[in-house]
Length: 115
Length: 115
Length: 115
Length: 115
Image 1: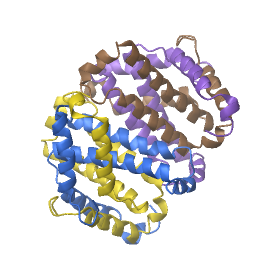
Image 2 (image 1 turned 60 degrees about the vertical axis):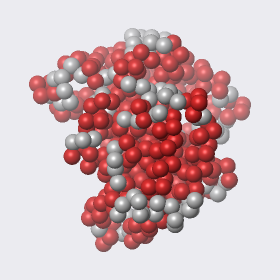
Image 3 (image 1 turned 180 degrees about the vertical axis):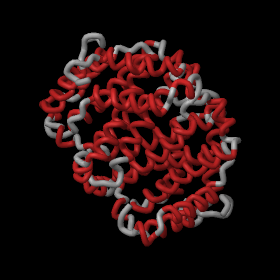
Image 4 (image 1 turned 90 degrees about the vertical axis):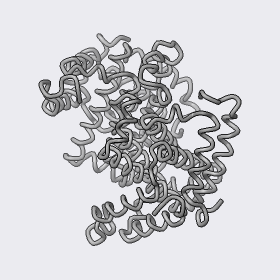
């Protein structure tokens, strides 16, 4: 699969099948899923915690660490998809609308080069 | 935009343009982005922390809370996209491969209905 | 050691000695320590994520889970102490002052029984 | 209050009174408190996320940021105390025992200067 061809719905379908085959939707209420998401995000951080920001760039070039980080990112995305499945959220539209808010909140002329 | 038609690359493009217009890639090293991801995941949790698992289902039917949660989910996804942009990660392939690992780790016959 | 007799300084001393014996203060800048704290807090959550709020009370009566949670709580506190050591923060005074703010923010007559 | 004189029990008492005056123990099950802890830890991180590790040291010398970080650290500690109150955990003993495990896991001769 590649990002140019793959739609959000196709990814949702993979996650949805996995959950339903295991009858796991009973555990997937919004509260639990938000915890699972935060825990996976924390596991991604764990890879970088003791390194300088510069060293972390290097870590992403080492095959093993890069694979670990890619797996953790996938876990975050899988739970984000699970959250959107459970709560009937249109992800594309959610991102599109949030980016409009972000553009208003951070106008280019004011935030260029700093935050 | 809707999930049936939208590809990952299209979403990546929206996020990439936003970052480059603001010249923010200088802040987007892997370490910082992993922190930003964890912080956004935490903000999603914050909506649910004092409610029972059942009450949280109800919260997702209230328009305001539903919108807040949808915005927080979008923020998580935006930083996940930013992380994948910075580190040249193919998201579809990452999810596909991680789901193969998950299927091996959690075989249906052993994990059906429990975890 | 017991909580009635043990001072914060005594706990700080234990953590400080551990860090200095390993020459680890080089990694203990505020950014890294805040990440370590969040990661440990996440590991405590991990124990509870798929259980109902009620089941979680039960989990704390099972010896193994109770020990795991106690160890995770200790890890959180150890990094909180490490953060206070590195940044010269008087913990007792920090808590005392924050509780005064909390009392103002959440007056009893308005917040009794709800949040 | 200062760390040399203040015992853990004295800090527990301050937090316990605050909770009981508001009748908030009904919300303080282990699951919810673990989420609250992670959220506060995340708020501490939020102060440092876009800065280099070096800049973060500087941030802790600026009065406003230092006060913000101290308040966030206090919030983490307050919820850690609340968790120990709810679950009858002896904090001093928990830290003492965890540090014994840590000393075994990270022997000085092997971990001096690196991790």
